[in-house]
Image (cartoon, rainbow, N blue to C red):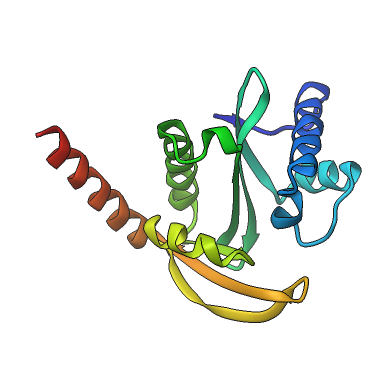
Length: 166
């Protein structure tokens, strides 16, 4: 896993990623405001934002970033379509969640994509509720993942692995 730090090589990777999420339309789901390349770089260069990512021959395939909010972190995640749902996607996400939840007691997820709510719940998030029109005039949901929720999710997951293997 890589931690983003400002510099030519990593900024180039971010620029490639920005071009990809712009071309596939996912940039509009990831950021509250339409963001230019410069705004995106400035966002991730902010000392309050921590971005971790994985790369392959095509560039960034997994990105997860965190911003402080009260005693927790707001968490956002993206995975390239060809890697979504695969073992390496889950491994990257688990690593990032483990590290973040060692540092803070709770992560907050905010989404306008109702189809992602079940995925949040499978990860251990509690759907706190809906906040109408919060982002871009869309229905918006707030989800919370506590250390305890994450530990329970990991225990359920490991039990399934033991049953499958045993």
